Image: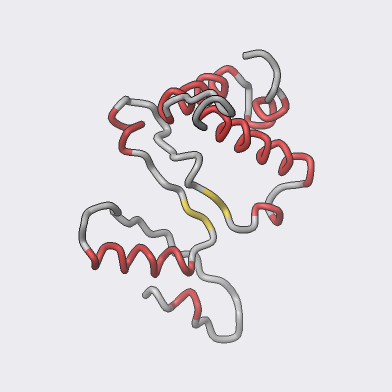
Length: 131
Protein backbone atom coordinates (compact mmCIF):
# COMPACT_ATOMS: atom_id res chain seq x y z
CA UNK A 1 0.00 0.00 0.00
CA UNK A 2 2.62 2.57 0.99
CA UNK A 3 4.74 1.79 -2.05
CA UNK A 4 1.78 2.05 -4.44
CA UNK A 5 2.14 5.80 -4.88
CA UNK A 6 5.63 5.23 -6.29
CA UNK A 7 4.90 2.23 -8.50
CA UNK A 8 2.20 3.17 -10.99
CA UNK A 9 2.79 1.53 -14.35
CA UNK A 10 2.59 3.87 -17.36
CA UNK A 11 2.47 7.04 -15.25
CA UNK A 12 -0.62 8.63 -13.79
CA UNK A 13 -1.29 9.46 -10.20
CA UNK A 14 -2.72 7.85 -7.14
CA UNK A 15 -4.21 9.76 -4.24
CA UNK A 16 -3.71 8.25 -0.83
CA UNK A 17 -5.20 9.93 2.18
CA UNK A 18 -3.68 8.68 5.39
CA UNK A 19 -3.77 9.53 9.04
CA UNK A 20 -1.05 8.83 11.55
CA UNK A 21 -1.02 9.16 15.29
CA UNK A 22 2.33 10.58 16.34
CA UNK A 23 4.04 11.32 19.64
CA UNK A 24 2.84 7.99 21.02
CA UNK A 25 6.26 6.75 22.08
CA UNK A 26 5.92 3.80 19.69
CA UNK A 27 8.81 3.28 17.29
CA UNK A 28 6.46 1.54 14.84
CA UNK A 29 4.17 4.60 14.74
CA UNK A 30 7.22 6.76 14.01
CA UNK A 31 8.30 4.46 11.14
CA UNK A 32 4.83 4.50 9.57
CA UNK A 33 4.69 8.30 9.88
CA UNK A 34 8.11 8.75 8.27
CA UNK A 35 7.08 6.50 5.37
CA UNK A 36 3.95 8.55 4.72
CA UNK A 37 5.86 11.79 5.14
CA UNK A 38 8.41 10.74 2.53
CA UNK A 39 5.78 10.13 -0.16
CA UNK A 40 3.24 12.81 0.66
CA UNK A 41 3.07 16.25 -0.82
CA UNK A 42 0.91 17.81 1.87
CA UNK A 43 0.95 17.52 5.64
CA UNK A 44 -1.86 18.75 7.83
CA UNK A 45 -0.72 18.60 11.44
CA UNK A 46 -3.41 18.87 14.10
CA UNK A 47 -2.65 20.35 17.50
CA UNK A 48 -3.86 18.57 20.61
CA UNK A 49 -3.39 21.81 22.57
CA UNK A 50 -5.72 23.70 20.22
CA UNK A 51 -8.25 20.89 20.29
CA UNK A 52 -8.24 20.82 24.08
CA UNK A 53 -8.98 24.56 24.09
CA UNK A 54 -11.82 23.91 21.61
CA UNK A 55 -10.17 26.01 18.89
CA UNK A 56 -11.23 24.64 15.54
CA UNK A 57 -9.91 23.94 13.06
CA UNK A 58 -7.12 22.69 15.34
CA UNK A 59 -4.48 23.03 12.62
CA UNK A 60 -0.88 23.57 13.63
CA UNK A 61 -0.20 26.40 11.18
CA UNK A 62 3.54 26.40 11.77
CA UNK A 63 4.04 22.68 11.05
CA UNK A 64 1.44 22.13 8.29
CA UNK A 65 2.48 22.67 4.70
CA UNK A 66 2.21 21.79 1.03
CA UNK A 67 5.40 20.97 -0.81
CA UNK A 68 4.64 22.70 -4.10
CA UNK A 69 2.12 25.40 -3.30
CA UNK A 70 3.67 27.45 -6.09
CA UNK A 71 1.95 25.03 -8.50
CA UNK A 72 -1.42 25.51 -6.79
CA UNK A 73 -1.50 29.27 -6.20
CA UNK A 74 -0.87 32.27 -8.39
CA UNK A 75 2.10 34.51 -7.54
CA UNK A 76 0.03 37.22 -5.80
CA UNK A 77 -1.92 34.77 -3.66
CA UNK A 78 1.23 32.82 -2.88
CA UNK A 79 2.90 35.99 -1.57
CA UNK A 80 -0.13 36.64 0.68
CA UNK A 81 0.01 33.09 2.07
CA UNK A 82 3.72 33.50 2.79
CA UNK A 83 2.96 36.84 4.49
CA UNK A 84 0.34 35.14 6.69
CA UNK A 85 2.87 32.49 7.71
CA UNK A 86 5.54 35.11 8.49
CA UNK A 87 3.03 37.08 10.55
CA UNK A 88 2.05 33.93 12.46
CA UNK A 89 5.69 33.08 13.19
CA UNK A 90 6.20 36.66 14.38
CA UNK A 91 3.19 36.30 16.69
CA UNK A 92 4.52 33.15 18.37
CA UNK A 93 8.22 34.06 18.39
CA UNK A 94 9.76 35.04 21.69
CA UNK A 95 10.14 38.69 22.57
CA UNK A 96 11.78 41.10 21.86
CA UNK A 97 11.66 40.16 18.12
CA UNK A 98 8.23 38.58 18.29
CA UNK A 99 5.01 39.08 20.21
CA UNK A 100 5.63 36.02 22.38
CA UNK A 101 2.05 34.77 22.05
CA UNK A 102 1.08 31.25 22.95
CA UNK A 103 0.37 29.14 19.84
CA UNK A 104 -3.28 28.73 20.80
CA UNK A 105 -3.78 32.48 21.31
CA UNK A 106 -2.17 33.28 17.94
CA UNK A 107 -4.21 30.61 16.15
CA UNK A 108 -7.40 31.82 17.79
CA UNK A 109 -6.64 35.36 16.55
CA UNK A 110 -6.25 34.06 13.00
CA UNK A 111 -9.43 31.96 13.20
CA UNK A 112 -11.33 35.02 14.48
CA UNK A 113 -10.12 37.07 11.50
CA UNK A 114 -11.00 34.23 9.14
CA UNK A 115 -14.52 34.16 10.59
CA UNK A 116 -14.91 37.89 9.90
CA UNK A 117 -13.84 37.58 6.26
CA UNK A 118 -16.30 36.59 3.53
CA UNK A 119 -13.77 34.16 2.06
CA UNK A 120 -10.09 33.21 2.13
CA UNK A 121 -9.19 35.75 -0.53
CA UNK A 122 -10.65 38.63 1.51
CA UNK A 123 -8.83 37.35 4.60
CA UNK A 124 -5.50 37.28 2.75
CA UNK A 125 -6.08 40.69 1.13
CA UNK A 126 -6.71 42.24 4.56
CA UNK A 127 -3.52 40.90 6.16
CA UNK A 128 -1.45 43.59 7.77
CA UNK A 129 -4.40 45.91 8.30
CA UNK A 130 -5.64 46.71 11.79
CA UNK A 131 -7.56 43.79 13.32
